Amino acid sequence: MTLLSALAGDPEIEALLSDAAQLDAMLAFERALAEASAEAGIVSEDAETAIRSALDGFQPDWAGLEAGMAQDGVVVPALVKQLKSGLPEPHRAALHKGATSQDVTDTALMLQLAKVFDVYEARLTALLDTLDALAAEHGGKPLMAHTRMQVALPTTWGAKLSSWSEPLKRQLRALVSMRRPLLVVQLGGPVGDRGSFDGHGDAIAAAMARKLDLGLATPWQATRDPIVALGSLLAQISGSLGKLGMDIALLAQNEVGAVRLAGGGGSSAMAHKSNPINAEVLVALARYNAGLSGTLNQALVHENERSGAAWTLEWLTLPLMLVATGASLRLATLLLGQLTIAVID
Image (tube, rainbow, N blue to C red):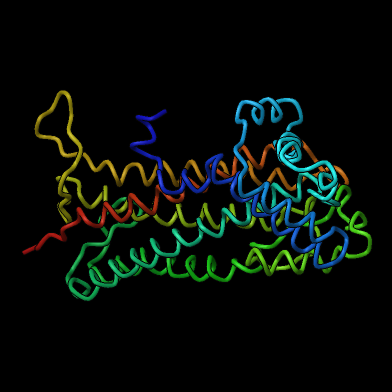
């Protein structure tokens, strides 16, 4: 899929969601858990020191982790086993004490998402700055409007550019406001009631949230509406950029000529062609994310206190949406850099 990724992927977002990035986030969870547990007094300071040392020097057996994932449906049991093998016997029971696989995996996801949000916010801000600059330069210029694909009435470039920027402004605000409600620590223990932390679960969760720079929340392993809300926002962002791409592709048609695109794609059969590739891919990514958003909604249906099926469906869907949204932002930036608004006599 390397060739397709060159067209519609996003290396920066893919790196933030990689196995290595997830492992780093999982180790950060275990470190914060050990520190918070020592502060609460349910593990010794010697155990905490030994755990931190083991985490700092950990070299994963990736083949073993892959085998564990296939066997257990989640990588954490194999990871904890490898980590414990590097600890002195007296301290092994202190590692991962009270926690369950979902605590590790979900909190790691939140740590990864925090970095993804940083990228999204920077790219959205840059896009909006570009659109504002275009509006300042060209906003008063005339443009023929089209409704239902037919010539309508004269309008201005300011109105067109506003139709691209206003949704993105709303979505940037939504993304920023989503950080604290979404990016929260997960700590529930085996059945999600923090009963495995000797009465210190709330204090440990609060300490972990501080250490990891995440928000504090009650256990949410079977209530995934914040994840689904994120998926909806991702579909909105890529959908708004798909509308931008569709408009630019139509405006760049030879028969319309309202814009010109530098560096368009070539044809193997027609040397005169300059295809609006980035605009087209924006449309495809918008439709792709819209479909994935519907699939992600089905991950709301959990059986009782934990669902392996819904959880796996989320893993199959959300990372693809995150990469597609990053790719949309990347390509929109490239597309606006290609854009020249034509002077119409």
